[in-house]
Structures are given as C-alpha cells and as structure tokens.
Image 1 (cartoon, rainbow, N blue to C red):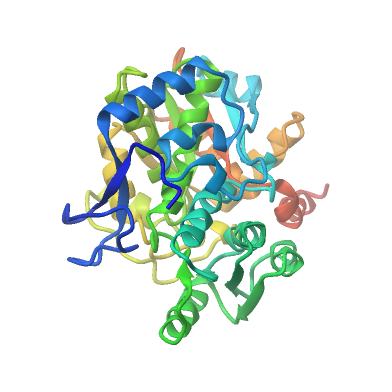
Image 2 (tube, one colour):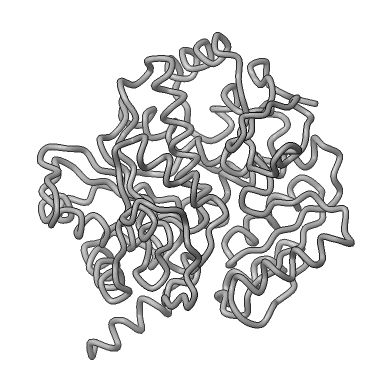
Amino acid sequence: MQQTDGFDGMRCLDCGATFDVDGPQRCQECGGALEATYDETALAQAHEQIFDGNPAELVDFATVLPFTADAIPTVDEGGTPAVDCPTVAEESGAGSVVLKDEARNATGGITDREMAVAVAAAAEHGASDVALPTTGNAGHSAAAYAARAGLESTSFVPSRATFETKAMINVHGGEMNVVGGRYGDAAEAFADASEDEDWFSLAPFGTPFRHEGAKTLAYELVADHGDAPDVVVHPTAHGTGLLGLSRGFRELAATDTIEEVPRLYAAQPEGCAPIVDAFEGDDEITPVEHPDTIVGSLEIPDPEGGEYVLDALAESNGGAVAVEDKELLEAGTSLAQDGVPVSATGAAAVAGLQQLAEEQTFDGESVVLVNPATANREADVLRSHLMSKGI
C-alpha cells in the first residue's frame, strides 16, 4: 500500500479495539466506526513541514493522511476560499465571520475531501467497485473520484434528490439506483443490495476514510489564518464533516500547533434535528419519526455518526442549534444579496449563528461558517423562498 510513514493503524471509536493499516472498514469486535491512528512523532514532524510550507490543496496535507499524495485520485480539491462576511459579523456581534466556501471544490461540495481519501482507500484495498447511499452530493463526488481512480461506482439516491446531482452521477459514469421516498429508503436499498455485492462501501461511517478526508478542512483553516478560529458552525447530517473537523483540530492541538480546539456547533433544520434534540436533552440520538425539511441534504433522521458528533461537541465546549426552514432560507438569500452565494444547506450555518448570537456573546471572536455545497444545486429552493415573498 502507498501509505504515509506516520499511518500506523485504526482504532474503534466505540470499544477502542485496534487494527492494522490494512484491516477492516468497521470494527470486528463491536461493529463500531473506526478512525485512523498515527505515530505521534511522525505527526508532529508532519505538522512542522506542512506549516513551514504553503499548503494550497488537499494533497498538500497528505503527510497527515493515510495515503501518499500519489495514491490520491485528486482533482485539485481543497484550497477553498474563506469569504469575509462583515454584515453577518456585525449582526452577530462577532469580531469576524468568514464563510468557508466548499462549493469551490471540483464537484461543488465538501464531500470531495471525503471521497478523495475514501476512494484512494478503495483502490489501495484492491477494490474494483465502490457504492453508497446518498442524498445526492456524496454520490456526485463518489462518481467523479471513482472515475478518476478507474473504479466503478453505484449510488443509491432518493427520488427527492436534486436533478443536478442525479444528472452528474451519470455524467461521471456512475451507476445510479433512484429509490422512491427519502434517504432512509435509499439506505435500505443499499443495505439489501450489499448482501449480494462485493463492493467497497463509501457509506457514511462505513469506512474510516471519509471522515479522515474531511479533517483536512481543519488543517486548511489553520493554514489560511495562522491559527484556529474561535468558533466553527457546520451544517450537519450524518456528521462525517463535523467529526472530521474535530479530528483535525484535536491532532493539531495535540502537537501544540494550535492552543485549543475551537468550539464546534452543529446546525440542523428544525424539521430534522436529531443531534440537536439529543444534545439539548442530554440524551442518546433518537431517530426523527417524521422528518420534514426543504433541505434534502440535511434530512437524515437517524445519523450514522450522531453519537460521535455529540462527543465532539461536548469535548469542544460547543453545541447544537436547530433553525426553521424559513429562517435558513431568509439567511441564505440575504447573504447572497450581500454578494456572497451560499447554498440552502450552508444557510443553516448562517441562520444557526444568528440564533446562537441571541443566546450568547461572540464579542471579538473569529467565527467560521461552513458552506458544504454550491448554491447552484439548490437554486430552486432559494428562489422559491423569494417567490413566497412576492419577489
């Protein structure tokens, strides 16, 4: 395997069992999700080398990933801009607010970071096919990166997924099964099909390498600004992105590259907010019985990484916030009319910060809002909100 020098194995997030670098994708002891582990000395040396340089894209962080840059089927993902949002900063009372615009990735979303590393893992493990259930965005990324690596891909997509994501899965050569209903129906169809298939699973937390790719966002934020921000608000579905952020910042804090992990906040739509409900109730994740939000990418009633996200929020002294669809659409269109395009998904972070600012102070603090996907995928949702206002 084309693995980096520091990558030394995997550890279960639930029971702590450890496995070799070429081990399973889920824990063989308890079935829990895994995370990559690294030699501490090698990790500290990698941090020095990275931040002495000028990292500009994901492969520049390969020394803190499991696989070498040559093994990653890159399409120049990463290096996304942090766009200044002075109006939001003023309204929230924060010292500064930037929108980390993951829409600028190759396929238009943050899942490119995840798939760059996860598809590399599939290829390194000798897979010929990859597959996943997806609300749409991850399927688009998976099809593109699989094609780049010379692998076949299959996405199980709910019928409510946007036309743009479904179209691009096919454009990149991916197979697609459109399943009537919502994400849960697509996930069930994927699970059923997996019993007869020998593909490499790219399902959320079906492999440790999706959240491993996601951690590069934390590294990039520190590289961009010379230090970690005080606060990060991340729209959250299954939790791969937020857990990745937590991993990245914790690694950087462990080597004293940053002083402490920023406060992390998960933002979810009120009509489907299982992580928020659990966080506020100091309880375990309870699946949402009747999910109802206009933001399909965040309509995950039973998130695979929910418990891991709760741990990450608590460890960072952060929190979780639920916003109404109307509020997030208003926040998104208002920001767009200030010259900063943001998806309906990303607008959950904007509205989330606004709501949090009513309950606590961010005086003088630096805040990052994550925009996980391009607004072009959800233009009809944003436009319908304006039409409801007679615009």
